[in-house]
Image (cartoon, rainbow, N blue to C red):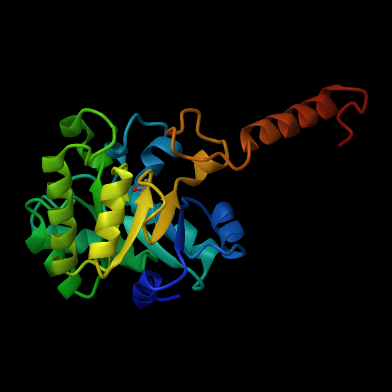
Amino acid sequence: MKITDFYSFKKGNKISMITCYDYCFAKIISKSEIDSVLVGDSLSMTVYGYSSTIYATEEMMIRHTEAVKKGLGDEKIIITDIPFLSTRKGIQKAIETAGNLIKAGADAVKIENIKGQERVIQEIIESGIPVMGHLGVTPQYIKYLGNYSKRGKEKQEANNLIKDAIKMQKTGCFSVVLECVEASIAMQISKKLKIAVIGIGSGKDTDGQVLVINDILGLFPSPPSFARVYERLDEKILNALNKFDSDVKGERNGNI
Ligand code: KIV
């Protein structure tokens, strides 16, 4: 799959995207039907246990992108999040960070929000790096937003979201993620844009869906309510660990 294939998702099949942060999960995903992978800055929470995504650093994003690329190979698209503030320290710095993520194995980078960032996004794209936008709940702005609740419920906010999504397309983004956007507004945006709109907690009428792998596998202790849990791996892992423990300490007396 190539970045340009994203445009075809406007016409037919929906695009599936899942987050991934390490080699072993990437190996499994490489054998799946999933279309694309996001090395999300959610790793700050799911891998490192921080309270939000603002603690993800460029160094972390590079290392985890490298690990995912090793497991995934060339079959599936990898998009990596540009971490907190990296696009706010001047164009030079932003291009450098985006370049480092691409060299680590990403095919594209994801940038939250458009306000005050049109020029920097354009420069990154003109440097040859595809950019995916991210609107609605933008977790890097959590201190400003105050909470992760649904966006676009009020008319003014909904209109601003639609305008920002159009701006992202005009700026040259190849796709945009809508996180926790009122379903009817997400549907409207998906119909309006020529680029693929990937939803998360934004209803079913987008061009595709992304979810956090730790949430859907029952690994993250406090997943958002919109994330469907497809498997309770936490219970399976706990069982396996306790079986190992009892093998070590039990009748078999360490004979494993
Ligand atoms: O960091 C992340 O995992 C994300 C998804 C929630 C879209 O940005």
